[in-house]
Each structure stands twice: as structure tokens, then as C-alpha cells.
Length: 281
Image (cartoon, rainbow, N blue to C red; front, side, top):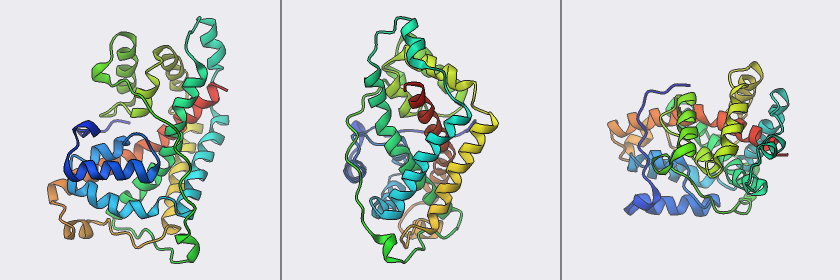
């Protein structure tokens, strides 16, 4: 998938003022140790980040939101049967791999937890910007709080600008293969083990573009879309509401492009992590 837009991430260590406060809330409310790429990209348009998070925050921990996230995770895991990975453990052992497989498995889990929730959030923002109604469920069940599962631990990254040698090579290969304007944080976390990431990525590439992979991505996108009628509201993230909240036209245009990008990216990330997990079991 090629997307001809520029993505400027505002790293947490560079965030100031309201952006820094929103980042703190995101980590706290979502139970994460890092700020997802989607929100770091939104922070290039600070007022949009602030308003979007204001509308998304009340959804986290609500029964329909968490149920849809669990469904999306399950859909990803079930889909891998149509494009199964090789046994990555045995292949790496044959190459005298010295890494800790349990550490790699643990590195996957925070993203497997976060990405289905980000998929729902991206769909809320995407559909709202298209003028569609989201968050229309007024039943008591829609507002029932079930809470957010416990944090999945700290995350470490190898950023492309800091990578060298084989690590840089595989991150650059992923950038070229995906034709995206950023290397997702998921791959930067797995780049701590470049030999593993190279093997797993090359195995995965055989399947991206297959009918089974494409159909699975559609199922994930459809489940996130179905959640729009299940979520509580009202949710004010349409263009008119954003303008009234002080989002300027240039920022609104930039936000539209970013929302579209992440709405398109996330099904693939969910499937890819399910594939990587299956290859390690």
C-alpha cells in the first residue's frame, strides 16, 4: 500500500504543553508504556489531537469497545490458518540464533493488545470525518464499564534513524515493501532481534496480497465498522464539530490524511503480529 503523505511524529520526549498532557493521559487510560504512532502523528496538528482524544477517551474500558477489540484480536489469530507461517523457532535454531524467544513473544503482546483498540479508534475518527453517525447506542450496556486489562509491560524500540547494519537493512526493507511513510513501531520493537525480524518478514511477504490475507483484513475492518453502532455517544469528531472546537482547515486536512492512513494500516499490522506470534509457537 503506498500513501503519498508526509508523517511527522512528535516523539514523547519532544512533546510539550497540552500535547505532553494528552500523551500522559493516553498512556494512563489505555494502560500502555508508550504513545502509539497514530497519536504521535496527530500531534503534528495539536488541536486535532486534543479534540480527537477528548472524544475517544470515554470509549476505553466500555463494554462494547473492549468486546469489539477482543473480537478483532481473535479474527486476526484465526485468520492465520489461511496463510500459516513456517516454524520460526526451528529455522532460527538451525541458524544458531542466540536470542531469547520468550523475550520476542513478550515484545509482541503490548502491540497485540493495543492495535485492535487503535483500529476501533481510527474507525471512529474515519467514519466521523466522512459524516457518518458513530456512537449511537444509548442502552445501559453500551456505557457499562468493564475496565482495561492490565498493562502488558514496557516496550523498547530501535528507531530507524539510530539503526545500523543488519538492523537498518531490515527496517529499510520493510519501509520499501510496505511503501508507507513510516516504519511502524511494531517493527521497531522487533528490530531488537534483526535476525528474527528478517526471517519472519521474509516469510510473511509470501502471503501479503494473497486472497486469504486480503479477506482477513476486510473482516477486521468490517468488525471495527460494526462497532460504530455499538459504542456509546454522542461522539463529536465530524468536520463541523472539529471546526467549532478550533481545529483550523490546514490541520483538518492533515488530520483527514492521517486518519485514512492509520485506518488502512492497522488491519495489516494486526494480521502481521498474529502471523509472527503463530510462527513462534
